[in-house]
Length: 382
Ligand SMILES: [Fe+2]
Image (cartoon, rainbow, N blue to C red):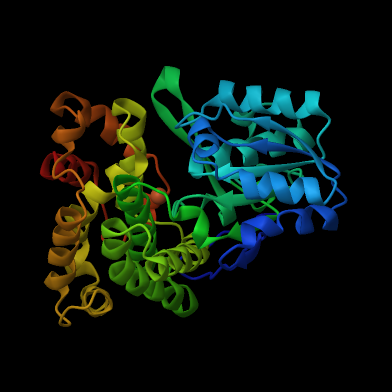
């Protein structure tokens, strides 16, 4: 039986063990020893390899006598074929666990390959809520962004490129065993990637805070995540070597993900996935551009919460201040102003609306949302 969160049922499940601290990436061998893995597959992308972020991890594996192979071919927005390729590599290598190093794409590819390792079948069998019967093979996830929260989240996003769809797998059995949250791994992340991945965190926190499934404990986590991100994101974008800002952003990711993994999100995420599916808009860019428009739409349905959000963002407790702050923050950190600036066209709005309306995030958005509302919101952001 699956117990789902709702407005009257609070859910809190975090299957992943979370380790946070500067330098914890180099402790990677310890969780592997815990599960007896002597041979592992590193799942990453060439950017992470070229940025030399794998060196401390590979050194730690060698020191511990863990043998490893690498799959460096993760692409942005991985699809079914990419997961199958990664899984084939895992099987050929004889690995007993995966070390995923990178952003959401690397970590989601690893999570899905690990699901196939123990459950068989195709990723498409697991789309939806709680369809994964057995725990995935052990994954130790080391994020290099702060971030999507993929390293400790029950959600994974897989692209179906032929149908322009982004599919979501939601299951406690499809999560990493460990998340090693090391702010030092994010220091070299360029300003624009820092901005869009950080906005994803802020949007997770805001959407979880105001959504219909929120309850006191999830709200506290989400609200602290908003405070940390509002303070630290502009700093981390301005100066990537601002270690305190990188620390705060990593902590913001952890708190935001603990919250939204248990409450779901809202209209921003319902609308963002079709932007990726139809127009290849990067997830962080999509959610950042949409955020202030959806906040304006939701404001009067959750006035007190928006006042609290305004304060968490360092403003006077006025609901409109939260909306204005989000617009200003986007401008300050270099987010494109409009969806048209990133290639979105008006003639895609109907199709995107069809897809957005199928998302479970619509039902938990604080303001009841109809098809016409989604069309108007896409138009407003276009
Ligand atoms: Fe997101």
